[in-house]
Length: 385
Image 1 (cartoon, rainbow, N blue to C red):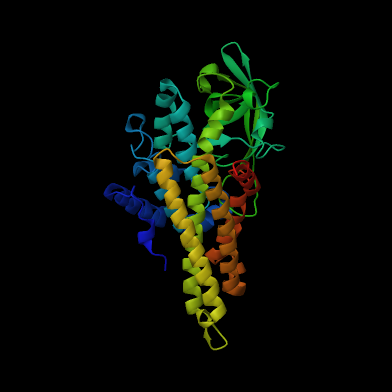
Image 2: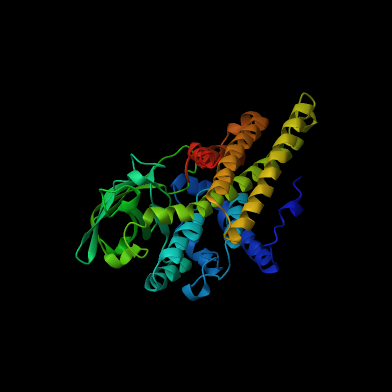
């Protein structure tokens, strides 16, 4: 079994442990029992956001003056891990907390922070960020969505796809071109409050290979008018820089989830092979089983230790693009390999939806794609060799 002492980063405090206990109870009582139902309905219950807010689980790393918990990003890590241990991929909590709220905190004006962060912390608003388009994935410089100035407003036109929290989001950060003639220098981030505009439309809640309970959606913007005051940052054309500044944090969030998922897969599988018998003995008594699990557990432990070090770097504001890319690509590749091994060790039962390993296997595949594909991660690393 993994030695938890290896993961006791210097950032762990008594207060953080208390928060972890609260998060674990919440995930086990309010999340885990509903995973299968959410998979069927294609989204979490809207009420879940309000329940989480009551316990301070929304925006715990946002300052208290904006309605948050006043903690640091270690609190977001705890939530990612406890949600992972509950076997839930349906809830876009880490995006709401660790990404959307932090874009506003980092680049918003005081008025924007006062207007939006308390509502994100209370659950009144669910957050999303709209980057990907039908013809544009990792190549954000080529987005076609536009936000063209017209007097005191921007007029937003375009289509986005694969947007987490798409069906429930009331506040959406949109990656758009304020200057369509430029590539990176033409990109800006603008905020759309969906209940205050016309011309915004939610498309399909997309059917996916995995993460069936997550409302990953198409979004359409047709002459959507928003105030110029909804621009994030000190001026137009700053969006690409803002995205690059936040990506190390976002990619580490993906790595946190990967480590939690591989540890859960190994825990479930270790117990299964101890209980399951074949040819008159327990499956774990076969040397092949023990050797494969020994290797996988070692790799998961290495991933845990590396990610813990990356977390310390993040909290010290020293996590660089290359190290974050290494963490994202290696842990998610390893997550998929370990999930696949664990399903194999379950035999035919591993392919049945009633066994959690089947969902862990399905859900692991997309981790290598979003947040920047793992091929892009290797390209980034390669540029610094």
